[in-house]
Amino acid sequence: QEQLVESGGGVVQPGRSLRLSCAASGFTFSSYAMHWVRQAPGKGLEWVAIISFDETHKYYADSVKGRFTISRDNSKNTLYLQMTSLRPEDTAVFYCVKDRGGYAYQSYGMDVWGQGTTVTVSS
Amino acid sequence: QSALTQPPSASGSPGQSVTISCTGTSSDVGGYNYVSWYQQHPGKAPKLMIYEVSKRPSGVPDRFSGSKSGNTASLTVSGLQAEDEADYYCSSFAGSNNFVVFGGGTKLTVL
Image 1 (spheres, chains in turn cyan, red):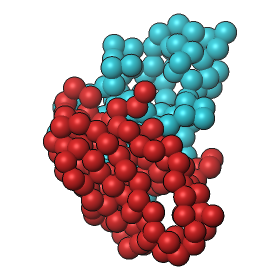
Image 2 (image 1 turned 90 degrees about the vertical axis):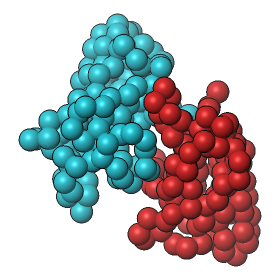
Image 3 (image 1 turned 135 degrees about the vertical axis):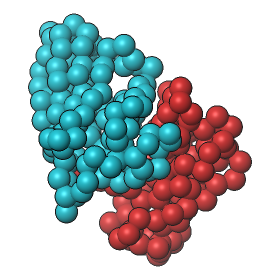
Image 4 (image 1 turned 120 degrees about the vertical axis):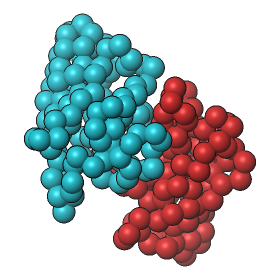
């Protein structure tokens, strides 16, 4: 079945960097756009970034633009999120999410979610 | 403050129907037919319930339905069941600047 497994979360000091990974299985990873969505403790969902199936289109939330970079390796069925200059307000569970479409011209709905990986930014 | 506005809570008795609203602007909900709804149980990942305003993914009961009028989208849950108790989030495509925006979430309680 379609599955996404995130890894790479942990506790990091403000200003430091962290890279999240997401391993995909059970579907043709190279055909779909992928998102990162985060959820701060006790809060709602916040969209972070999207990457098209072929990496030609990438978009970011204003809150992370210039600090986070989304990328993918279709040969490894893996999605990444490189996070730099981390702030305490970045503390959240980060979900790797599959879009129903591929091109990232818009989002057609997020139909497969990972279990999430927790990032805590604290000194 | 979330881009889309949802009521913080909603409730209904088993068997009843409840509707959750999601209000945006002409730049998101009103401008595109790419509204989705997600169900999230405590400690679990969200689950897609409705996409493209009113379409249901395979496996989602037809008790769940979606609609849109102007800048407001709605999720209706008919024949409420205990397992429907969860948080519900709406989202919308919002153009290439904001791309996807979420609502703040609605906690649905089955009385």
